[in-house]
Amino acid sequence: MTEENFEIKLPQFEGPFDLLLFFIERDELNIHDIPIARIADDFLSYLHHMTSLNMEVASEFIFVAATLMRIKAKMLLPRFETDENGNEVDTKEELIRKLVEYKRFKDLCEELRPVEEERLKQEKRGNIAFDIEQMEKVTLPGEELSEVSLYKLMLVYERVMRNLFNRRDMLEMLQQELIDIQIGLGYNNFSISPKEI
Image (cartoon, rainbow, N blue to C red; front, side):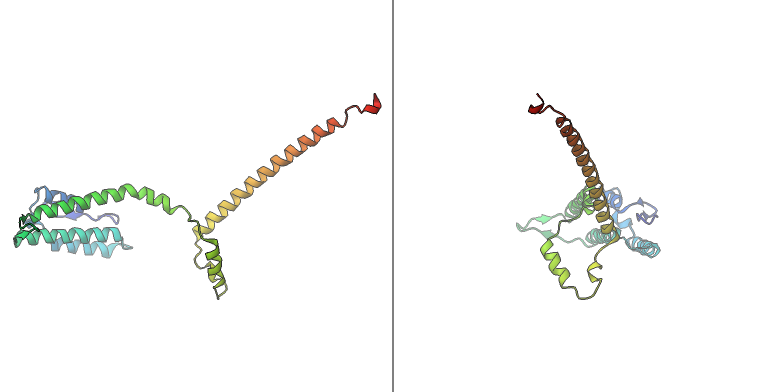
């Protein structure tokens, strides 16, 4: 059991939440054999050993535990639910459909994670007039810097340095061209004037 991923360890199953749900929905594991209380106790001890709470893992556990309890309750206390047409609804199929939908959303989140990480690296363009107005409202000296992070300072420094070096390169290039033009004009001064002819 690592700090990153919580795994369920039972006599009949060992692995992550998603795999447990997958086996239950394929009827390879009997829901009556899954001790939900033991899984909850193991997860609570896992949370106590973590250095910081991972909300994604905790929310995933709550969802899976609630789903397992709902499936188990439906199995133990069979009720007949009907849809709007009065037809009997198979709650197990409905729960399986929800589990498949959960798995699809989880996979989609994993696909979008690189996009999210890339977006977090970008700086948003602000409204300058609004920012100036907000800075003028600041009453305590230094308070305007309270929202500046080290990362933002590093990005601004990097941008300033890059622009500075780009300007130096441009100035050197302009000076080089100016010298070349002056040398060229100097050669034109050596031309023969009409008086000399």
